[in-house]
Each structure stands twice: as C-alpha cells, then as structure tokens.
Image 1: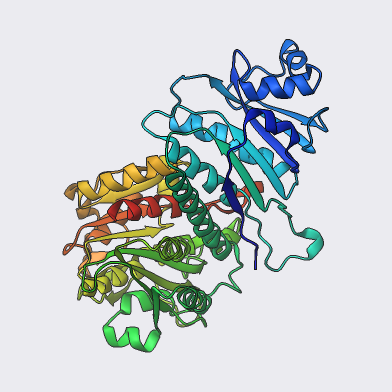
Image 2: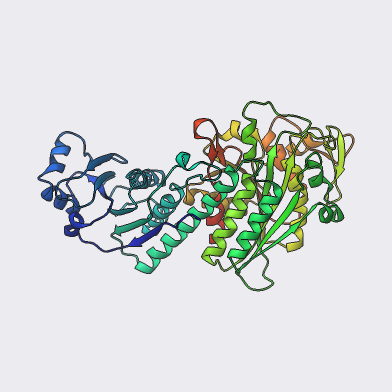
Length: 501
C-alpha cells in the first residue's frame, strides 16, 4: 500500500531557513525587492541571489523557476526559487494554480523525501488563504501519483516525496488552515484512487473487479455500505437496457451501490451515478482498431464515483450521499445486441438501438431510473459519453447539461473553485425530436449535436428529480505520450458535495 503524504504547518522565521535540514527548500519570490527570506539566503550565500538577479535569472515573474543545488550557506540539499509575480497584485485562480504547480513540481523533481516550502501571500481574486493551502495540498498528493500495478520494479516511476513542511503567513487560524490541508489531501487521494482504477487494463478491471474494489472501500470506512446487483437481480428489476450492453461479453454486468450515511437518518441523499463500461469495443458497431486500447478508460465515470465516495467518507461530510456504478463490458459476441434491436428499460420505455457503440446512455438509463428509489435531493451522472464533447470543448473542459439551472450553477461554481472546470450546453426541447423512432419510444442516437442528444436521451429517465449530466470524454483521460487517467472530475464532485454540507 502506498505510504500517505503528510503536510505540516510550521512557523519558521526567515533567519531559520538556511539551517533547515531537508532534501529541498522551496521559497517563493516576488518581483522587485527581496523579501526578508531572500535577504537572509542571499546573505549566507555570499550574494548569490543578487548575482542571479543581475543576470536576469531571478526576476520573480509568475511561475519562473530557479534551481540552485548545494547552495552555499544553506543546509538543504537543493534550493528552488519560484516566481510569484508582483507583491499585492491580484492573481486569477489560473495564475495561482500556475505558481502552486511550479512549487509542487520542484518538490517532486528534487527526488527528496522531505521538503520545506515557504511561500509569501498570494492574492487570489475571489479566494482566501484557505483556498491556496487546499490547492497546494491537493497538487502535492495528485501530482505525486504513480501507476505501479503490473509493472516490473525497474519500470516503476518513483516519487520519493513523503513529508512536506509548510511555512505560510496567514491571518487565518491554524485549525482552519489544517482543515484546508486535510480536504486538499483527501481530494487528491480520491483523484488518485480514480486514476488507479481507470489505468488498469480491461482484463483486470472488469465489472466484478469494480464491485470488489467498492466492497473494499466500504470495509475501510464504517460510514460506507456497499451492495451489488448481478444480472439475475437486474433482470428481475426489468433492467433489460443495461443488460443489453453486456450481452455479448463473458463478463457479468454489475450495478454497484455505495451508500454513505453522514447526515440524519432518513434525510434525502445526493446521488452520483457513474458509467462503468470497463472495455468498449463498440459491440457489433465495432470501433476502429487504432487507439481502441484507450477504451479501457470508458469506466472513468465509475472510477470518479468510487473515488469521490472515499473522499466523502474520509472527511466525514455531514450529509447523505449515494454513489451508483452501472458497469458492463461491451463486446461483439454471439449473443451481442445488434443494431435495430429494441429493448425495454426499467422505466417501461422502449429503445431502438441504432448503434451499439452508443452504449453508455443505455446503462445509465436504467441506473437513473433505479436511483428514484432513494428519493434524491439531486442526481449527477458522470460519463465518458461522446466524442462530440471533445470536438466541442477539447480536453480541458467537461460538458455539463441539466434540467435544473440552479444545480448546474452549483456544479459550474465547484468546477471553477477546484480548477476542474465544466461548461454548460443547452438541453432544449428542439433537440428531443432527433431521437424519434418508428419502432420504439426512443432511439439511442440521433442528430448532429451528439453531446446534446445523448443528454436528451438521459433526460427521458430523470423527469422526477433535479439532475445534471457531466460528459467527461475529453477530461477524464489523455491519449498519446501522456496516456493515462486524470482523476477528473473527482475535484469538481468533491467540492460540489462539500458545498451541499
């Protein structure tokens, strides 16, 4: 099991910095006159910093980094100076993240197990010191992620950072800052838990494996309870739509529920629902072979639900939350669903399956009907649903569609605060007609606005509650040389649920 990273607040004055024995020392630098910390380091290093400034190597510009190994007069093995821009100048959240990311990158790249960070006050527009500390803690944990499963030791990437000491001048109480550290670390761990699941190959991470890992999470936290429905139980409930997706696979489909009780007994819960297609060949509507290996990431929505539920349990959030994972493997076997087949949903609506590669909405349709039993305050589903969302928003922004603008605004705000942003797309009635079918109540594809019509399909099953859909096809994982899961949207979901408490 990976050892947990720890971050401890400390109150060291400037004069003590040169005598701190740590693997690395990271100090924030403003543009203009040296801070007291830099004056002390400059003094003990025989004016090395002033020499660097004259050479233009230490301007303090936003995100600029200067590396000084074995700096004279400083006990730390490596010293990093990170530019924080002009003192007192308002920074956007993005600029704040830029500085903090540079700090964390220096800590990790130093290959030290311990680091001491001293950063001056960052004046972030709309945010306080607690946001700065929480983001720093999150980035320390999130950016320390390594994928170890099934790798030989010689191929495993090693991040040695284990302990961070943080000196930060703030008017906020130590208790509030420590709470921010705790929240940031917990969200980072939840994000990394989602990455671990999503990065596993499809021959390991099956629907049964997701069920096993969900049970393990419930065993870890007494506030979490896990239940799993197999195909026989789902058949009895009338979930033919979900079952149609896994019909061609030897792997049994699963509907997994994680129930977190942090609020009052009987209090209506917030529900998050994840698409868990552990491998998506496209079924009979087979995908092209190139990059099909990335279809193991088609369960990133499910991974984000499991990761977020662990964040909520670790932080002991005082509300009730239900996490549901609709999981199947989409294969072109002899029993696979065919284009033109008509299946019945748990809601009673019939669906003409025109394209078996539009399968995520099929498993979600029954899951979104199933969650009505919880009488939810809100429901948010998360899915790598459409390539059209990547065309519209690229890889930086998730798509958001909702039948409740107030819920949508809460999610947009959570995305902005967490730097896990989403953008709302319309779900107007004019798009619903694109799903008309001559042979069933609804078709599973239709029209050019693929992301919108996919959400229109889901909206047919969410009329009884406040609902939002997050399309994370472009944000939950990356391809190419950077191939791997991002852990998104665990930060967005975590902030949203924390705000509800």
